[in-house]
Length: 175
Image (cartoon, rainbow, N blue to C red; front, top):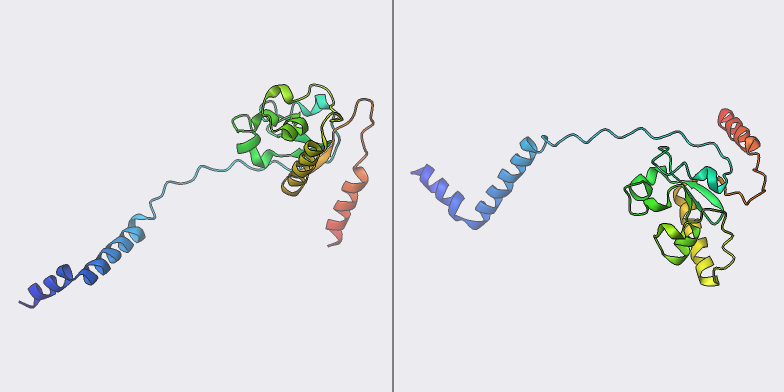
């Protein structure tokens, strides 16, 4: 008779029924929760790219298709956005920017491939509001991604960054 009373108390009292449901749920999570599917292995990150400058033609190969690395230029600065591959890679929503100067497209909020220049674009025809937008995008890219170098104007000589890299290596050795 004591067993019947215990079962009645357990199953007919709403508070006990709720506690029993919580206990069953927790036991399920403990024992069955460990059978999650393993995550696919992450592709190893590419080593940091050495600082250098690019012409508009040189940056084109870094589109995530021809090369794993993805570079985007914004307002004359080149950024390595490879770690944002799901956005800027070939299958991403902004994949059209990979390997291009995206300044004009970002300034005009246009994702058409037509807004991506085939030659150096000095952006001189953009209005003040559009240039402010480009500068804001440039700051966001600078905070989030690695700055690689600058986008060279036609006839402009590339900067020699070897002093910066040797100084950075020396600082690491000193620490």
